[in-house]
Amino acid sequence: MVPVIVAVVVTPLSIGLGTVLLGTFEDDKAPGTEVTAPKGTELKAGDVGVPVAYARLIRDAAADCGDELLTAPVLAAQLKQESNFNPRARSIAADEPTVGSGSLTDPRSAEQRAKDEKADGKPAGDDADGSGPGKRSSGRELPDVSPAERPVTRGIAQFSDADWAAEGVDGNNDGVKDVLDPSDAIPAQGRKMCRLLRTAGKHPDYRGTRLELALSGYRSSWKAVEGYGGVPRASGADGDTYDYVKAVMKSYPKMVVPAGRGVSGGWTLPVEGPAGTPYHQRGPAWSTGLHTGVDFVVPTGTQVGAIGPGEVVTAGPGGDYGNQVVIRHEDGTYSQYAHLSQVEAVVGQSVQGGTLIGWSGDTGNATGPHLHFEVRTGPAFGSDVPPVPYLRDKGLIL
Image 1 (cartoon, one colour):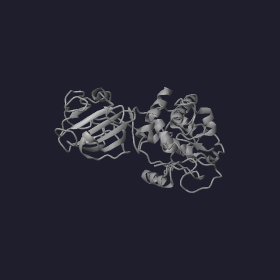
Image 2 (tube, helix red, strand yellow):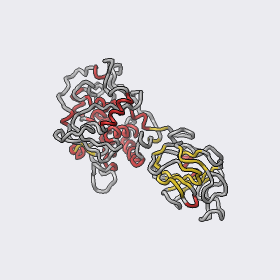
Image 3 (cartoon, one colour):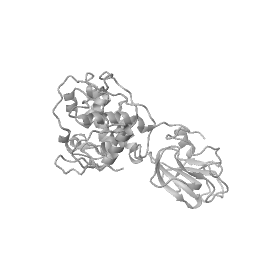
Image 4 (cartoon, one colour):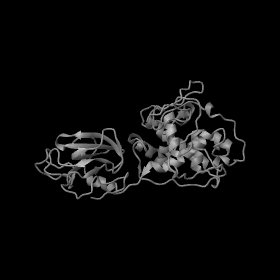
């Protein structure tokens, strides 16, 4: 889904993501109580996670900060809320016409908002029992700030022009700080969040945890956080920021998948079966005189799964390889699955570890049913690398 931000009416975010709210500022939470972000080894890819092209940028931005609270899942959840990973997303000025397919602070379409609200059961921030975080007083007068007065924001991380002038970085070292280039905007997002976390740490008396305070500062401004004495209330003038923080805190634990053999969504072997012909075995059966992958001895019709998160770049006939699938992973490597009896995956599909991509067979240049598996540095033949050490780095042992 590509978000279009085209309206001026501020609609509270109502993201139906998850059922557990971690580190929230509910009435029974003491302000400043810290919650450590869950650790994960891989970002979830695809429609419910992170586009593969941005995963490394997000991980690097988190790692550059060095704060244990600023993890890749947190940054990913922010980008999901800010722009739905659309590098061309743009909010609009208050005097621009409204066409009803988005809002100044919510990049989702009206249709997507309705789906999210239905999935959640009610709009976020709607505390039906009257006991939600919006009922807690900060002890300070709320500033008279209208969210509609916020400046236009642009890009995957939704920077205003003023913020970009202060926070923008040349992440890809091309000599240009481009707010519409994710390779610049995502590192800038990480740097801004890192600074906000440090600032938040100086105010343990503010309402909310350090991460929640930083998220509030990112969504509005640190000046607004100071004015509210912490995270704004749901019923206040800036309830949108409250809902933004709530949505990010709910969704970021869902942005990762565990790693390990046999774990759906993480990293897993492509089939359950013994290894056969090893990598670089010599023989006349191969055009290069060497076996460019490793074989798994399985009967025709065995389900074949992707080894990890990625995007399908090839799916179909592949000459001597028969029916094949090639997947690009977020670290820039590729995995290939050949001699399939039938292909299930389609080009452009986002997959997780264990996603069904086809069934084993003996199509192409094969002497019997098996799965030929390769790890490559590129999508094409001739870029193979030893698969066993690669799999071992993912916690997978043949």
